Length: 246
Ligand code: NAD
Ligand code: ZN
Image 1 (tube, rainbow, N blue to C red):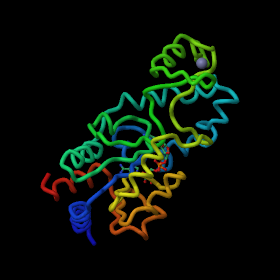
Image 2 (tube, rainbow, N blue to C red; image 1 turned 120 degrees about the vertical axis):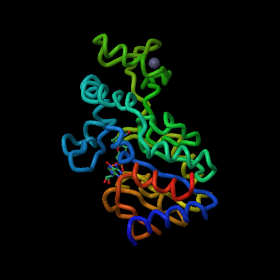
Image 3 (cartoon, helix red, strand yellow; image 1 turned 45 degrees about the horizontal axis):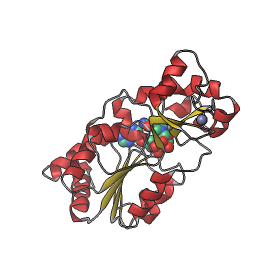
């Protein structure tokens, strides 16, 4: 199949599906200027996030953890959604997409207008105390860090604060359970910009009766997919919208 045939195939799959979910990863946000992990030049080539972004690193030396990660991560939230995020929001608005399961913590789907969203690796809007679990807006943590208070502390019990993102070594929170439930009703899973290597999210394609993949590089799930488009998410999803007449 050439590119146009693949776009038409993808558009038809979406048109004929009663419940389409999108599963997105870091690759959908690279066109917004946020590096992914595994592309050439991605974060993985510079550090090992399994070490620096782990719950072990946070507990062992929280000040070092915040020094390494905080400013780059909060910088994600200042970026703007790109055409791929907007295309998914538009598909939902038009009744052609039930929701988005995202591994990203950057908040760009919400910013683009997606409503039904499962942020299975958390987000950067809040933080909470590791001891008493009190929750605060993220600025409460960032302001302390900027004033030189590192690690930032809970005002109720002086426990160390943590970001409400899922770190390597953490259990997945409530949004993952919701995503699995939604997958039970899903007839088509549209993967966008994920290497599908981070578990347990990488098991979700196994639950989908039909699978479509939009990713620059190949993935381990390509063989199961009805269609694989190896191109950039912004281009592909914009073209799919056009093919659907939206
Ligand atoms: P990954 O880095 O493992 O894989 C990204 C995939 O996207 C790659 O296969 C790459 O070929 C593809 N890609 C890159 N740019 C693309 C584009 N413009 N269009 C289409 N495909 C493109 O990412 P992952 O599978 O999401 O796993 C990484 C983990 O790191 C996730 O758990 C995620 O939570 C986290 N992470 C999040 C962010 C973010 O919030 N934006 C950024 C980096 C890492
Ligand atoms: Zn506390």
